[in-house]
Amino acid sequence: MRYNCKTNRNELGKIAAKFIAFDKIYSIEQLGNGNVNDTFKITPIDRNLSPFVLQRINGYVFKQPKDIINNTLTLIEHLSNKLSRENSLVHGRAWQVPLLLQTLEGNSFWHENNDDIWRASSFITSSYSIDNIDNQSQALEAGAGLAIFHKLVYDLPIDTLIPTIKSFHVTPVYYKNYVHIRSISNNKLCTSAEWCSNFIEARSSIISILQNAIDSGELSERAIHGDPKINNFMFDDRSNKAVSLIDLDTIMAGLLHYDISDCLRSCCNPAGEEEEDLSKVYFDLCTFSTFLRGYLEIGRDFLSSNDIKYLFDSIRLMPLELGIRFFTDYLNGNQYFKVSSENQNLIRAMVQFKLTESIEQQELAIRNCIEEMR
Image (cartoon, rainbow, N blue to C red; front, side, top):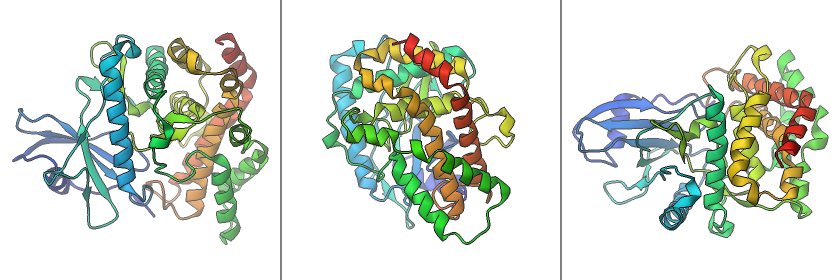
């Protein structure tokens, strides 16, 4: 079972010192609530040294850390060159790109004695992140920020990116893995787990809808972020506009639908991923509409009619997919996602399935909203 990171302040200080030479740390602040990696903001006591981000990369999930580094360097070079030539792409924002820091020995990461990899990057200055959408301005900016990122990577050749997670967002693969784990599990399912199993099987017919569209040529893969949940957006302290999209481990080839729908999954559930009271979980149609408007104001030109055609299907599929992943991990002993209790991944799965259910109940309204903004 993978429990949450227990690395203490002294240990973090020693790891941070692999990247920056300093005497003392002023503060260590945990950033975000990621289910895979652990991320910290390190502020040296020496004011001549800038704060930076220290991140533990989960070696169980990312088998080839050098591939992550190579993808990140490819992306940084592409973004930096593009921003220097075409500043109009960011629509008046001071868009920032997190830069990788080398260790004092000149390496791009530090390998701990176990499977864990540590890397450091520049901190996005004069900015803040959020865990939940608090107002519609944030929803609008999240949509705009994702569209800007897609516009910046639109011409990044996908053959220059290495798949860092095998079959990432290929829902039929996750479903097949679930079926396998379910078949070899000898434990009797509790009532909640039985509900999850029935929920998945009732929707088995839609599992392959996006993959079939790729295979038939209706949809094409492009460079995507891969994990644009709301706390990976950085907002400017003064203007409150989105100015960066961080956590670039999953930059690879995929459908724009994966990014758009995964971001909506994160933004449009006010209760969050860990809510135990499932009556509070729902898909917020107002936030969805505002986000989509923000995205399309910038990104309408690079969405084809087929992209629009499959948008609702992807919005429904992404929480279902994540729910399957959470539930499979629960059945498999919680090896992939970090947990603080044995049933946490089961609760997370139920939240995603309730969100899927809410999306299905509002299908007509969601489709109408998409059509109105074409």
